[in-house]
Image (cartoon, rainbow, N blue to C red; front, side, top):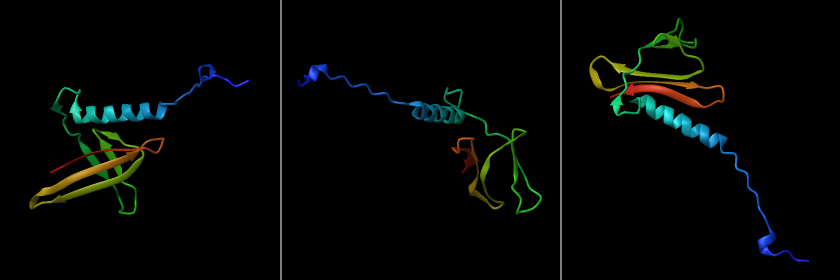
Amino acid sequence: MAKKIEDIKLNIDIDATQAQRSMELLSKTLCNLIDKCEGTVKKQPHIRIEFDDIHDTPRVFVDGVEQQGLHRVELNWKSDSAVGVRYRIDYMDSLGRLYGIGQGK
């Protein structure tokens, strides 16, 4: 006996957990750029970078707190130039996702 199209049911379960986490991370990142999401630019953090040897992994402190999961540190600065002066510090969280802070002209 053939089934009618009205008798066929299809259930689809979609796990949107990763999409939700990505949206939350994007929202947090945007809110970090715009203080309290109210339109004023947030103050840049106090950054301290320490290393004893160029072959060692640097220790990075943001507002006095040492950061974990350091992935990359970039610093571009010249005393006679205000153009191209910037920094970028990227971290990796426990799930392997990159996030970071930075400032530049």
